[in-house]
Amino acid sequence: MFEQSKSFNKLVGFSALSIAGSAAFFSVYGLSKLFAGAQLAVIIMAGSLEFGKLVAASFLYRYWEKINTIHKIYMTIATVILILITSAGIFGFLSNAYQGATVGFEKESTALIYKQDRLDQLVEDKKFLKEELSAAVAELPENYRTARRKLREEYQPQISQINKDIMELKGEVGDLKIALVETGVEVGPAIYLARVFDTDVDTVVKFFIFVLIFVFDPMAVIFVISYNVTLQDREKNKNLDSTPSSNPNITTTKKRWWEMFGENKPKKVKKVLDKSKNDDSEKFVELEPDIDDLPEIEQPVSVDLDTGKETIMPAPATKGAFQRNK
Image 1: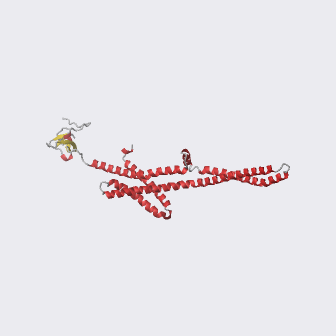
Image 2: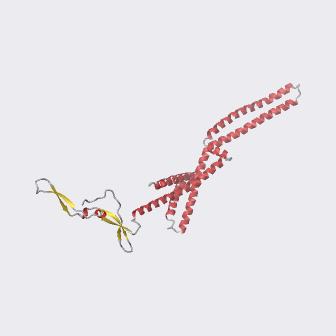
Image 3: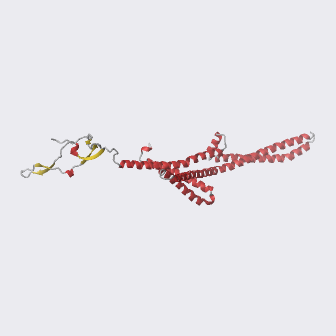
């Protein structure tokens, strides 16, 4: 559909510019975060290398047959290495974005795990105190009611404090679970995919980042080369349209219009007043034709290269052809 459009090469060029520009932006940003100590210098260096990579790919495509082998090998290796560097920068950008989105989620998850463990420990302490109290009471005789009451009074404050701590921790655990649900919306798809593939979230995100970086920048370079292909094809078509017919047996000669229709040269007719008569009647005077005033019509002629004989090719049929009244 698009290849028949006159602006198809512009469409390819726009696609190459958008993909290459976005890849360069993500790569430069990622490399600047990787080398945070000299961000401005890294941005200038990486930006110039990104531009040089695209120019190198175009140069290799256009002048592959004209440069020597060493030139080819070096520029090819340099272009591939720059593609890898760009991919590494994109990896740094995406991984930094993932960490920024999950830092709150991981912080709340760690706090929830800690409080859940603390809650379990308090439940075990409460159970242990109750078992110890029951064992101490059981060792006393039945008539030692005062001693049993004193034992219960000693253990009861500890059990009450544990119950209070358990209630507070349960409230905090509930609040953290609600916060995790709200925070998990940002990384919800990654969590869902991790559950589907029965793995952790980091592995899923790492897989998708590698898929993106192995497609992103190579696609940009391929689109730049494709744009060069469309430009060369357009130039070739222009050259073909500007050159004459490639058949050497066909030449074009200019014919007069009356020759095209098998007529004789027409004479000019001039209308003048006849003053010899009293009325204003007109008479016609035939004049010789002016060759320069007649239009020229081209007619194809076939020329035999061996004999030099010319053969007029039949004229195309036209509607309303001129017919002279004889």
